[in-house]
Length: 264
Image (tube, rainbow, N blue to C red; front, side, top):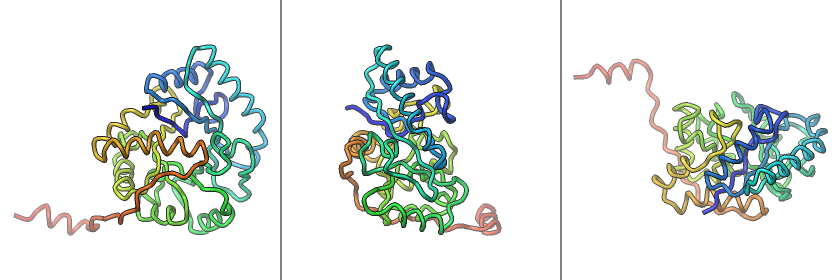
């Protein structure tokens, strides 16, 4: 089975991803060893001003493709971006949609705060012809505090993409727990590496694939790591199970917890 990674910061000299060409090629080599057959370059686009560099980013992408071929690597490399949600987001640009599918786009929100007016404005402006794929929802403070918020995003028409590293505890226990809750509720539509480097956040999916396959079955794992990401690149409908309610354990205050701990 060939895995597909729709979120990786491979282009050197742009954001907090690959810091040089050797790093980018090393990440692609790791992807090939991990049986990843296709990967999308998703440089951060934080503002309309960043989009003015689209042509330069495209040249850098083509150079990466050329260097990869010279190195004998077989991973198919696509171009896209990770768009920061902001007014005036331009989805008609070439790099706005992964592999230029013209339908889906990868978007992120502020980690610490996602005000209601931001969400409302965002879903109002994108129109019906585009579908947002929300990057790493399990890392947003608002969803960690109340995972049911993720259900609202899906009900509004968004797809959710969690990070492979989140399932492995790379970002901490609270984020791992949130990722599992989203999976339990059938709110996750794909898993991606969100790779940035060779060690801390590598371009690898197999360890997380194993976690999902063991808990939810190989069929679901294949859907999240291979089938749906490939459908995204082709602009096709993704396959999703009906969402299920997220069950939250009752929150206990300090004195209630103390009473339970000291009961004989």
